[in-house]
Length: 234
Image (tube, rainbow, N blue to C red; front, top):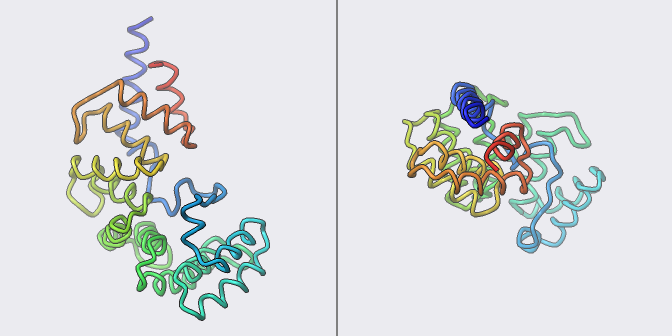
């Protein structure tokens, strides 16, 4: 039975290697299209009215959220400006419009709003409203990552791991994945486990890799390859 497990593990690792992480790409949020739940620290960092707008948006009251954030945007609240851009990008209560989203993101980015910087990186990396330009995308990710945004840390780490707009550098990708994982970013945690498993940027450590795979599933990265590793290595 053990040889079969080894062969299957090799096959899965080959799929991961040649598929570029099974379709991983730049991400705007931790796991796109899942409900965005703010941590207590994130809620405390927002202006009370901006937070009220977020709660309205989360409840599907988009007109109310937009009205609150528009008033806050007139006072140059970078978080409110970012949230309006996000509504345009996702078509929440309005038609989806990436051009308008980018305009709001760019305005918020001038005030070093980390989510806006990451969102601009995503747009330049995926060709939303602008031509695909991985170098520009990485510049935005680097600025956002330096401000502590975990998704930007993951995105930049992925770029260094895969050589997207930058030379491959496994040590840099490992450091960035570790930073994202330290903030409970599930993709960052999963990628960190993959680094330990493959020995990219760090000595191989299967036990550490398994712990990180388990943690990534707890955080929401319940992907088929995560479940596979837990089944066969657990």
